[in-house]
Image 1 (cartoon, helix red, strand yellow):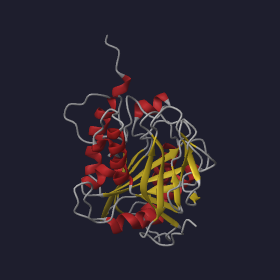
Image 2 (cartoon, rainbow, N blue to C red):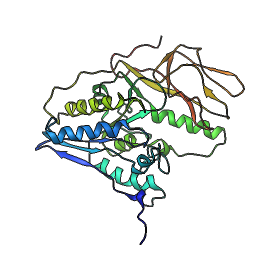
Image 3 (cartoon, rainbow, N blue to C red):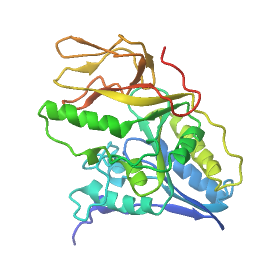
Image 4 (tube, rainbow, N blue to C red):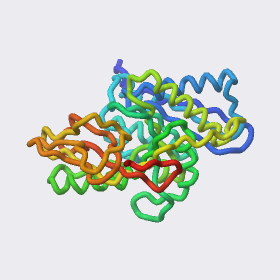
Length: 324
């Protein structure tokens, strides 16, 4: 008998449908298999719905506790590759993430809004990624920015970051200058980018570090807040929580082994112009080009990877602070 391929095991989704019309929400966890807060928060929310402590009265919510079963079983970030890169429909799937991605894309197309729950490796305060303003450009045309910003604001975290895809194009340009293997712009597309492409809106919630026991609680609160914000449950809309809104504007790339972030900086930390944020392998310091914020500092980047992203206080949102 042929041994079954566990890599092709089922993708579990649980759906609750209200009896009154309303929006359709999808909530994802474990797009990366080493991020346990999403599955924990989502499974708790499923039990809340089953027990009646959460009553879905309008629209629909679909919960996917583990979006990448292979990576989850392995307790690794990825199965064959990063599922949150180059996520799109591929009639000829070449790896595990392609196969899972085809099913995830089909699910995303059935919904209006996405909450994708993650955690991160380094230290830092929880934050939410959201997308561009309404626009008709070629990179990421969008027409639901107000709805998306409202969703980002209600989750219960104080930091919001946008500008990912524009910054990713800068990464591609630097890699080309360094004559590194070429990447497509689609490598910057993950769950939220595909959701916007498909006509919906989406946010990525980063709940804290992977091993922080409070991360799952942050995710669970965000799910309940999202259900209230979209009025799928009978509850007042949550108050806006964003304090700082940051626009990613620059990226610092590892150009040779030994380039690395330096200092105590964490994602969302304000840095003054001229502060050292990294050093090149030869010891040369790299300083903040202006007052701003450090995003995803990496003390051990590989060639062609980001040492860190750099952001500035954005005009979008409310209550943002200056970096001074």
